[in-house]
Length: 202
Ligand SMILES: [Zn+2]
Ligand SMILES: [Zn+2]
Image 1 (cartoon, rainbow, N blue to C red):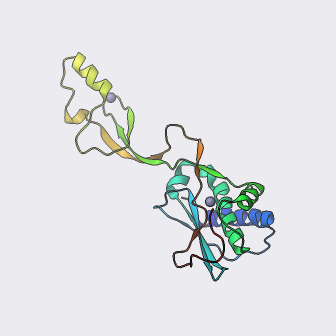
Image 2: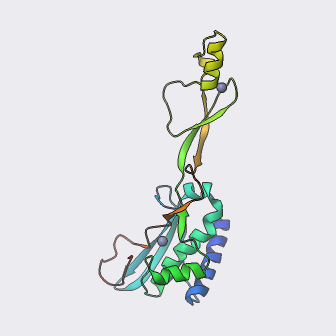
Image 3: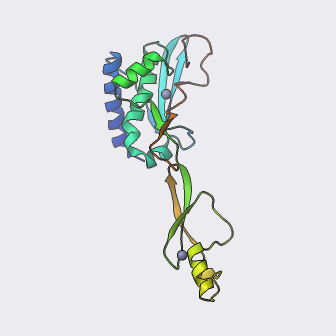
């Protein structure tokens, strides 16, 4: 996770770029916060009441940016476009106006797969580090070292030879770098916003 001053600077840059693309000279305060429970790279929660913009918050997934820190500027621009369109009372979903402004401001239209958590184990015999998607309750052993011990006639399944959990990490899917996911769900309404009024997501 980025330190608050660095994040504030990145946000300022994104708002500036989007402001120019949308001809929006001034912005309301747009807080940016981390949300560990996000299923996407980010989201913009937009509050519209009576067809008028009331406020917005941008949320970012710390998991996503731990693996793809270089996407931060592009995702911030993406979310800022949702907010900027809402400020102007325009449709703020992923429609044509969004696409045009997002591209003009240098934002990302797609994100990469949200990484998953992996457990890292080290074999105490050969020092090999393995990654597992699940944490296992029972002891596990390194296949190479089991094979070697068996060939030498020793007992491979002893406690000192078992894999040791050395930590967790976030790791992308098998083919990282594929831009296949929507960045977000398209500018979400704040929960108390009415359903009628300004147009929303497509
Ligand atoms: Zn081993
Ligand atoms: Zn979006």
